[in-house]
Image 1: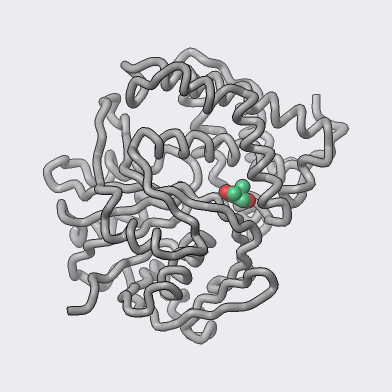
Image 2 (image 1 turned 90 degrees about the horizontal axis):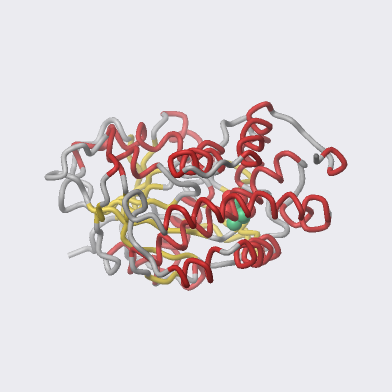
Length: 349
Ligand code: KPL
């Protein structure tokens, strides 16, 4: 019997990196790429039906993928890796709804927060037929050179765990088993350096990554630079600190406020992980590892695409509002990114 297939929805940088790694380290694994627009099939032919990842200047092309048009196929999907842009996720999953049931697992690999709650409230509204959810946090820096080619510019790590969601203002855990088939296959790709986490540790990893994305991503857009350039400006470093102190306050309120937060957490641990100092250290480390990368948000702006700002700084502002924590700096950052503003560091007030 061949191993069960993994379907991949969303072929941006993370989707490509995951598909390429799974193919490379599991040659026997059936992998199906889901194409949501007809022109993708033509681009796929032009790319020689391969995904290319360039790492340390060396190109590696992997082929042997199947593909499907999301709107045509009807067969059941057991393992779905969701790597779409946050704002398009609920809409992208909708045509697959009938193919996903209680036995299916969705693994969300995305930046930002809020998408899983949207998929639950817009697509899988009935708990009795809802699939299992896992989420992953990927800290690798990847930028695209064409639809099916990307550069793996920052070699970092990834984590996967069951999802905690507080959609509909309820505290609930929608569990997928962290030992699921799909998670195991990803762990089996050494280049991704993936660990499996509990739902609580996953939430901590998501909030840490959110802080990285809330600082690095919009600032590389506003100052129009690669990641590493941010740390060369003392004024930008101060701005990073100001964003972080608001994010830290929101996370503290969220985690120490059980009725609204997803679960009670030891305050000592919250302080160790999410004090402004700890977050600052992590943000600087990740920016340094990904110094030569073009952030995903800057790639979006350069390609004329919508950004994920509403699911990153926008999510922080909204979460803060619901918890009584104001976030004027994050609010301003959202506004400036949406206005398409470009700044130099002497314009920081
Ligand atoms: O997640 C990223 C992104 O660009 O979205 C990092 C890790 C910051 C790499 O650029």
